[in-house]
Image 1 (cartoon, helix red, strand yellow):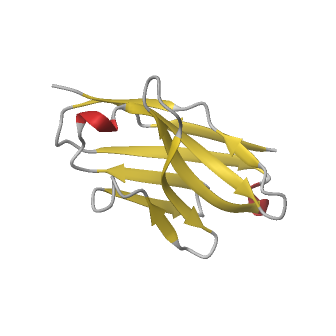
Image 2 (cartoon, one colour):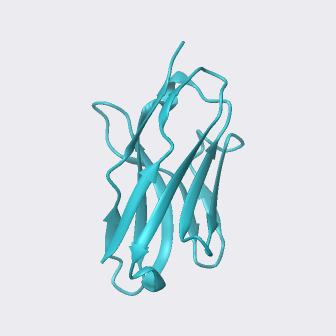
Length: 117
């Protein structure tokens, strides 16, 4: 089992910045890739950014140039640095881990990001 706990969400003004963190624990040695997904109210969950075990990073087109995904293996923590935030970025953000071999996914509980005023 892998446990994922997100933190760092909150209320921010348009154009502002926010950093999300995801602390992983459990069978972290078997994680193949990790990513951030977002789910606006009433919408489907979509991929924001992902980072693979090789270090390769992928971003949704809407966040390229504004968001940066990174990891700190010594702390078992995934980060999402969000800059130039827009009201349409408002959503619940979820941390995700994909297990090597099986492809089983684990999810955090989510953290709310609200861009307003």
